[in-house]
Image (cartoon, rainbow, N blue to C red):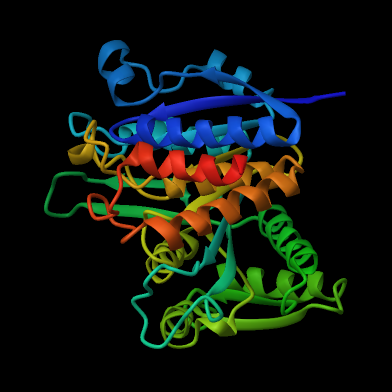
Amino acid sequence: MSRTYQIGVIPGDGTGPEVVAEGIKVLKAVSQRLGFSFQFQDYPFGGEYYLKTGETLPDEALSELEGLDAIYLGAIGHPEVKPGILEKGILLKLRFSLDLYINLRPVKLYPGIQCPLKNKGPEHIDFVVIRENTEGLYAGAGGFLKKGSPEEVAIQESINTRKGVERCIRYAFQFTRQRAKAKKLTLCGKTNVLTYAFDLWERVFHAVGQEYPDIQRDYGHVDAICMWMVKNPEWFDVIVTDNMFGDIITDLGAIIQGGMGIAAGGNINPEGTAMFEPIGGSAPKYTGKNMINPLAAIMAAQMMLLHLGEKDAALLVESAVVKTIQQHMKSMDAGKMGMGTKEVGDKVVQYILG
């Protein structure tokens, strides 16, 4: 019996609809090739919708999205909307309401992509960052005292619960075991300064680690992790960390794997739905110019296939992306690819369909 997956699509702002269109083109091609199908439900949420309606993400739509197999997101960010409104009203609302407590970020350098690190190639850069996605400094705890006055105080608190930390760390150990590469899990923290939050993280890390004797445990301060990601990225297999540090080191990871044009990520509730997206922003200056690189969105679709259990399809998409890069692309940067947005998507589809 043919498998059909229900996917919610939020193309978003700027170049988001353009790259999502190429991702959907690829998903349709690989499902046609391997005998399963998708039903896509479009949602208009983003800057234009907010400017017209004053709404970011209605609760009734959130209930619909919760019942789908996955969500495919383009990009959120509009030049006419104050920063923070869309990010909190759409991205963070989705993460918190759907309890997407795992942020999964592969950092993998593909053949044919120029790495900014001297003497580093694909054999050196292939690791994964697992970021706790619903707590920490992003929980929104804090406030102002005497706002606007010379005595103003701003407080932003990092919330770390035993439950939240443990489920993230346990997922990371399981992921490291299933990845079956170096079988090493590195905790990224700051135990020498953030002595409450990362005392909890470290204790839970070692307690849960007792259940995974086949996984080597490692620890690094976040500043050292950043240095070693540049100097010796081959040291890492899987890194687990909190929300803020994860946000920072995954952007560093994106650059060493070739830039925002190839970087993709997932926001996952292992017991529920998941959302997949390119890491880059909406890039409004490139809107409608057929210049933006769609590979990050295509690799987000590839991650979605893996999450849905379609491993053969995911491997086929990844192989097609690598062939496209090696045979046809000059750069991962917008406007410098040697091809247009649609043409890159067409090449990936060509390699999928053989």
